[in-house]
Length: 115
Length: 112
Image (cartoon, rainbow over all chains, first blue to last red; front, side, top):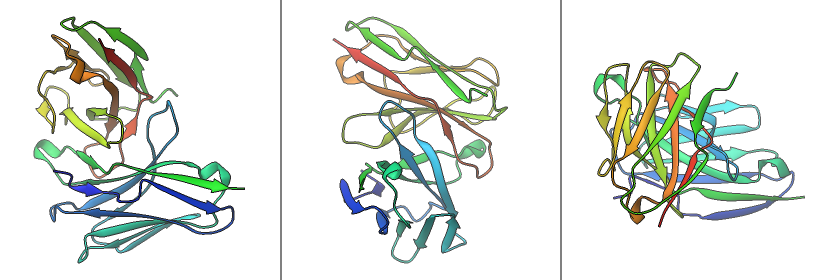
């Protein structure tokens, strides 16, 4: 059963506009959330994270919002650039035995930024 | 600074053959992980090692074994490969505390 869901397989936006990528989760034990960016033939690259004690985290053009009551998070990219074109994965984690930080991933959203 | 290095990058096996995927990290991380990614799906955790000397099962451990050889290295073994294990395998590492995982570039494995 998919515990982290990204219901939009793809998204296209014009360069300079805002990109909004969405993610939903079902497990209330998740307390740390991350977004990863992935280019073809490469591993996922960490983008931004948020702890469950916060509702917003910003890093330059990237902002992640967390709505715990709705079990929903979103990634905003402003302004979008052609180099942002990639697959974006949402991931969530809970503390595991022995302190591991296991991640549960969504299925990804392919973002295309049109010049 | 290499980060997480996976070998090999590509491999084709026949059903029933065995294979070990290698992973090494140079960031002095305590925890290491193996994931698989199938088409149209997110990454799924196979096994993890929270610290040197420990290993635990993830979501999809069947058909795999792992060895945490030392703090740097974490290997994944397929004892008798099956076509259902055709996938892209990613290794990752992180500190124990709430820090993001860093991924290697993957091993693309095809089993005929």
